[in-house]
Image (tube, rainbow, N blue to C red):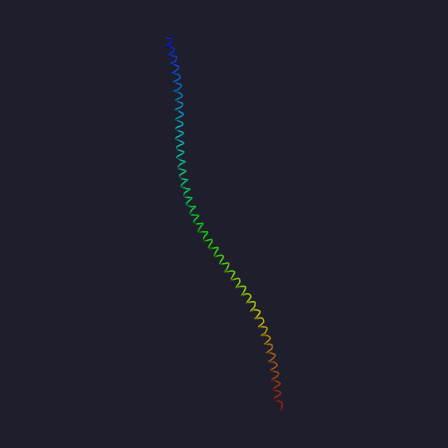
Length: 152
């Protein structure tokens, strides 16, 4: 009986250990369930992140396309700017030629004005000379008439 008692005590001890092990397994099982739940949440979050990354990739592709379009437009603008600069240069050359012509016209006008002034002065001198000559001719005619009236 003593042996039986020892076996019972050992069995009781084993039952307590098995209960403790069951309790520990239940705790571990609860932890595993929580970990599974967390893993499911993490999978959901990863799926959401994958979706967002896909959206971002799509947006990046759209941005790359827009940047390419902008590069193309910038190239066109640069070409037009180059044409404008060329046109501006040609216009500047034209303005320079016009300014040179204008300067020549001013010089010619000044020369013509000086010539006109000199010509007017000469004409005035000629008119004065003509008046003097007319007066002298008038005086001579009077003298010629007087001489013709005199008997010779």
